[in-house]
Image (cartoon, rainbow, N blue to C red; front, top):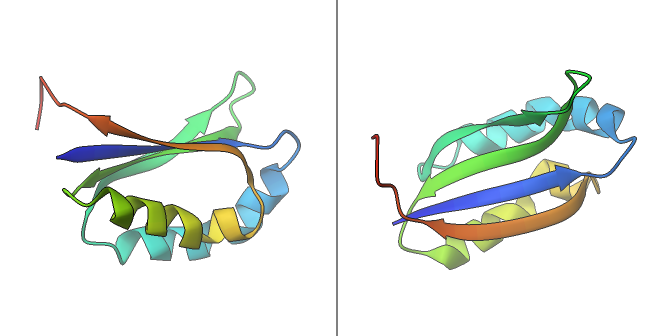
Length: 91
């Protein structure tokens, strides 16, 4: 089962993202359930959110990940949601 963690940055928080990026990337790489991840990019070409895909049956794992993410702990996100995803094509 796949889950998508979809996060939208607060407006004007690009520097918070940049300051916590290394810790966030290390956190991503330490989780064996993360299969793909990357930032959303706004019209100005700036990072403005995150999409992280997890391969796990355990939605609670994704919830715990979201709470412990260095970006979340730094107050970067305006909105966070978790969606269960049914892959039809790819992978």
